[in-house]
Amino acid sequence: MSNYPYQIRSREQYDAAYKRSVEDPEGFWAEVADSFQWHRRWDKVLEWNFTEPKVRWFGGAKLNITENCLDRHLAERGDQPAIIWEPNNPEEDFRVLSYKELHFKVCQFANVLKNNGVKKGDRVCIYMPMVPELAIAVLACARLGIIHSVVFGGFSAQSIADRIQDAQCNLVITSDGGFRGNKEIPLKSVIDDALVQCPSVKKVIVLTRTRVAVSMIKGRDVWWEDEVRKVETQGNPVCPAETMDAEDMLFILYTSGSTGKPKGVVHTCGGYMVFTAYSFVNVFQYQPGDVYFCTADIGWITGHSYIVYGPLAAGATTLMFEGIPTWPDAGRFWDIVDKFKVNILYTAPTAIRSLMGFGLDFVKNKDLGSLKVLGTVGEPINEEAWHWYDENIGKGRCPIVDTWWQTETAGILISNMAGITPGKPAHATLPLPGVQPILVDEKGEELQGNSISGNLCIKFPWPSIIRTTYGDHERCRQTYFATYPNLYFTGDGALRDEVGNYRITGRVDDVLNVSGHRIGTAEVENAINMHTGVVESAVVGYPHEIKGQGIYAYVVFSGGSHDNDLASKDIVQTVARIIGPIAKPDKIQFVKGLPKTRSGKIMRRILRKIAEGELQNLGDTSTLLDPAVVDEIRNGRL
Ligand code: WT7
Image (cartoon, rainbow, N blue to C red):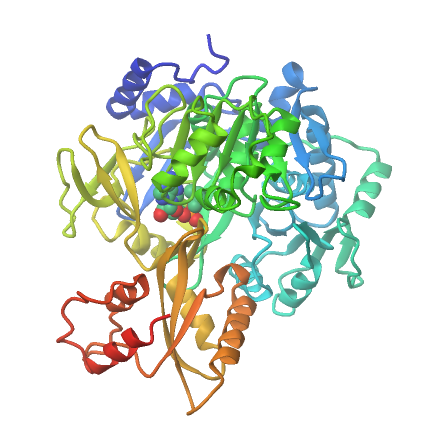
């Protein structure tokens, strides 16, 4: 008997659950939802249409997700580790927070938030390193019904400012700095730069981490530790959880698309909780007592759903790592696995490829015997990396789950279930129960049968589907629900093999996936164009051995002669300033002009082919305004 009534334990159970979820979705999800704690049960499990779009799961139900992640576990597993934290530097002490301690600290920090004037419905921006206080801050917001917007520590001041302004946040939680490998990241200083543009922010709570010198502005900036001490002297350790509607916003997470600025993807309380816990328990086949390690950062959706909410809602032990895979050396992940006897490891193909490059010296003296299940996420995994992971880390005895999903889906939609449904190298394989993928052609016609490829859409809502893009519902409709009527469009292309396994082949829109991070080409172009010397630019992706995709920029520069090398560096610096280091172009080619049609549209297809090194068959170039630019670009390829 499994500890989770909704845990699927055999292929037959998967088939039955899948069938039921399609025939009776409401009955199916009501049963799963019954395993959680609600203040009030729902009136209606699901109401939906994909035209507005409008999706309501568990309408009328009341809950608080943190009671499900914390309070609910206290009686049975209060002393069990909820979070194990491994610092960047292996010589610093690790920390273990039991469910009891985590509950206590979340309540305490929620009281800090109250003292600082934020309340239900307010938006709070969190910009922190991977320390337990980041999870505590996230959960404290959720406890009070405050909507968190976590911004990854690699984004620039300008990116933070854009996100804070869009959501009109009135409080920021940050730290003095953060450690990553041999670097110290000056988080508070970046926040100070951002806040010059953000009058909505009245308070900044600053955690001590690196104790680098920071400015502390009177009336605005307060230290985390001082505020906690105040709460202690107030003497009330409890903080009752706000009662939330299932469809109240839980958080906003910004993500890039093919056009414009990043949009705030909105997720809500009830459906998100049910689906993240359900998918966590089933895909990874989590068993009570297992130690689970997801190497993502909480600044991305993977960290939200599969470091914090999903595992904690399932009462699991989740390991948080502050550092990077290659410091002090490329054996860091494997040392952590051995140190804490990790049973389930969830990481990104880019990390695997990077560690592969360091050779087996960093693996050979490690035990890794505790591992039972391996997972990957974020981008297609190439077969070579899959086999390396399987043989050298899993020692051929751990199923690998290749989990396909997106910020907008909030949880894993297509994946094998470890040891339950078969994996296949480079294939995400089968949809989870409740998920109804289809492939369509350009016209939106559904492609029937197997051994076909097309654009990946989902035709029925699952509980954690995106509800809106913050402040701009029309943009949500346009981006995801307007390409094909009555379908959620993922932006990905996929194949369905002869037995129905899905293989995700990558984005079919102008979105890049660099080291598992999503970056819009338009966003990078806008940043490049901010550089004084740049007239215009076009950005495309190209295959990169470690990053999956690299960023290739074609730049038209003003003036006659310039120092290419210096200008490149200045452009890279400009992009780092505007977006952040993660969006730095890998290659910059200066060109006299871009290939455009007579109507002025840049022909990206050609640029993509040249960047990929496919210099022949560029396709039809007869509609180009000036076909000669193509030769110039081709000859100057980097
Ligand atoms: C895009 C979503 C899902 C959390 C991390 C990324 C790509 C994601 C896979 C996979 C092939 C994958 C897709 C998707 N992607 N997982 N297992 N196989 N591609 O979240 O930043 O929202 O990016 O990542 O292209 O659309 P995200």
